Image 1 (cartoon, rainbow, N blue to C red):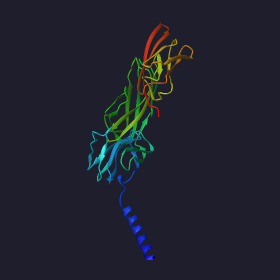
Image 2: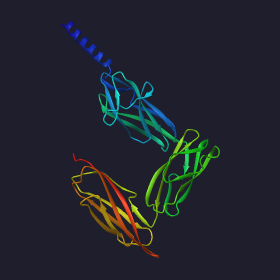
Image 3: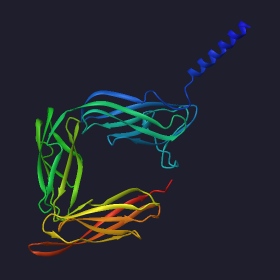
Image 4: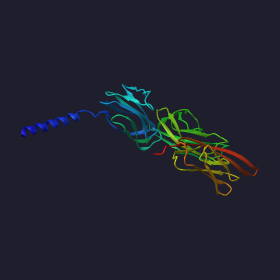
Length: 346
């Protein structure tokens, strides 16, 4: 009896050992987290997550980065894998036996200190969803002054110019604009010669019709393969100021409930009568104008009714403004597009 019990225990142990030696079905990764250690900010790196598919096929439908600094793709046998054309919303077919890698371009420009980010993988088949993580510590190779670049209030009829001073660890040249922050223009490129310090002029061109607050990033590349990113912001201080501008975006609207929104309208000089406001494109919408600063600032309150059809909402707020300055009263027209998405209720 003791021999029978020992034999049973041995068979159970062998069964467990065999199971442990077999990989789980579906997609598996050598590692789901990569620590790149300490790096100079401004480099663009290639990060690779090797994977293998066992036993059952997998359809990788989409990859969602946590940060715009990551650009992922799928490679098999060292080559980019084509998206399956008949898969809903695209996707990559990964049959059993597939050995490949999630290949990620990691752009570090504009970040400092600890940077922990990653991407989520979605699809069908064992092993999905999954999350991959890139960890790093980023030291600034470039020192940019001022950072961020804040123009402040700008007269649309005049525009503005600012000087940037960029210092590096070694001599370098700034060669190109990798990503522009329209309408900003950069003068002084490419740099005449390599130096520890480079100076640039950033121009905000005049635009008589411009208004509102704006913020963007300006990305510049250098001759040493690095790049840096500058945060920029400005506010057009024209005669009339609207917020938001140039459009209002309303997301995740509930069709079963009313939606409330507001637009600020102000005069930066002279006196402004209460605007005449009409909302076109949404039947049953209500508009109310409230004076918040006597003679110069108003809030246009919008109420969208319940029962909006599911899908994309497009409307137009039309404003008639009477501005009085020393030269008399002028009638000004402004149109603010309103875009929204009405989601189906759960």
